[in-house]
View 1 (tube, rainbow, N blue to C red):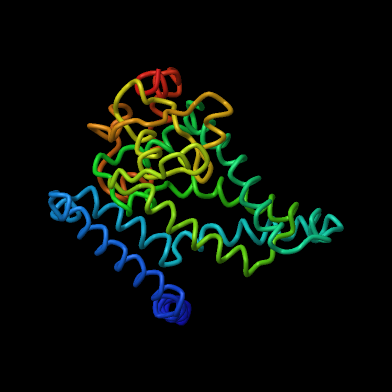
View 2: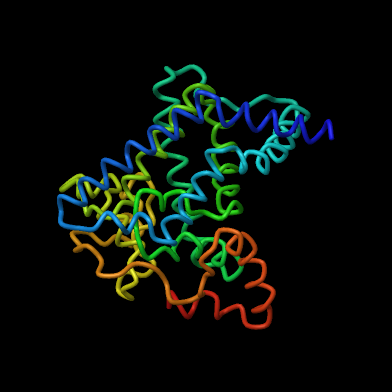
Length: 286
């Protein structure tokens, strides 16, 4: 009973903390602004209250409310222990340089690594079921940026942890970058169709990323970049100057609609298709 009380007290402290309340307030404000912009474009605000979008809201609560942190923290402590016992705190290759250099290097190297991690999630028959949850959304909103299975997000955190060690980025800068990237990716996942014009060749805009979520076959396996679109241009996966996709989502696998079902779906899918793994990717992306 005491353990239960302690757990509840920790949760209440977390959920009423300034970072969580501030994040929720910013998310609510951005959602209201985007709904207003879409209303001005002649679109219905009611789509934000569909079952699919409310599932995305559950994902947002899962990540903002500390539930994912409860899964990631033991892994972080393990990685931190391995680093400390290996005889070094970090490589900190850029230690002699100004912190701004650390930040820029971290952003570029991390985005390059996540570009290839992203392609791997699409190409791997075993990893695609985890990432397919993100692509199963047919109603794109800023909340779609939270619709990631926790295994998908663990991969991202491991990449950032490793690169942070190599580059030596300050902890405070890491937190600010994470917050800014969350806002930036929310804009990317909105269905506003915004473009940066010529800068689409460098940065990922809403329109550029919308193509990645398109259900049209000609857009499959395109526009993998998360921050910089230049990787897609270099490696031949970019689609520029595309119109807003007529439809989003995937036809296979058929992802269940609820948050809880999606939590277990990838393992069930992989077990069911153990003798025919090519089905996992071929039906939707080849």
